[in-house]
Length: 82
Image 1 (tube, rainbow, N blue to C red):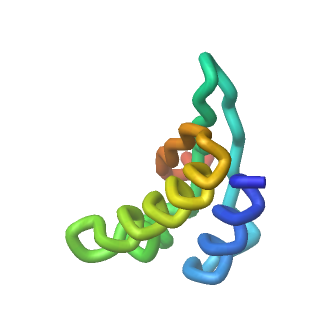
Image 2 (cartoon, one colour):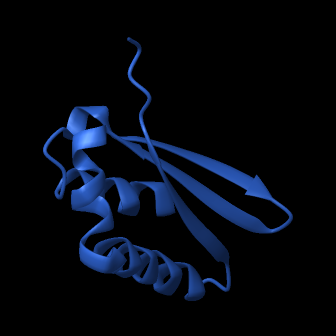
């Protein structure tokens, strides 16, 4: 549910939507969404002074708050094999 919302938002922001990977980890009543994007898309996701990722997190937090859930979003760069 949260994964689908995050995927929709991110794939519409990045240049390489096919490289977006999202994994969902549940632990102790908290859900963590691990977002991996291509190196060239990191700037598009983080934004100037972190504004875009902050906004994405706020949307996810607000959506989760409707159901009294705790959800966090972590961003990682996809490691390319050399």
